[in-house]
Length: 124
Image 1 (tube, rainbow, N blue to C red):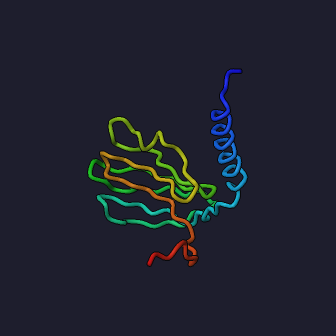
Image 2: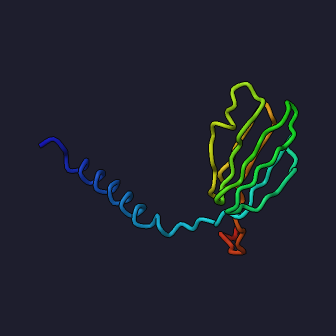
Image 3: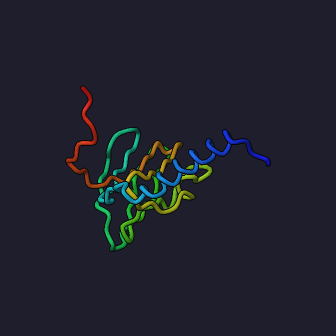
C-alpha cells in the first residue's frame, strides 16, 4: 500500500475542508455594481453611474488624458497617451471592486457597489 493510515486521515481532512468551502461559496454576497469613480492624481475627479446606454468622454491627466467609454453597465479606457497603454489593455470592468490603473496617467477607475448597512462583525 502506498499510503499510511495517517496520510489517509490528513488527505481526508483536507478534502473535507475543500468540500465544505465549495458547498458554501454560493452564500458569499456580492454587492451590485452601481457607479464608477475616477481618480486622477489620487483625487476623486468624476463619479459616473453605470448605465446601459453608450457614453464616451475624455479625462485630462498629467501626460495628456484618456478616453473612457461606458456601455452595458461596464466601463473601459479606450485611448491613452501612456507608452505601453496598459490601462487600455485591461479592457472592460463591471463588478464591484474591480479597478483599472494607469500609472503614467496617475489614473484609477474603481467600480463601487451599493453599500449595505449590514454589520460584518463587532470587535470588543
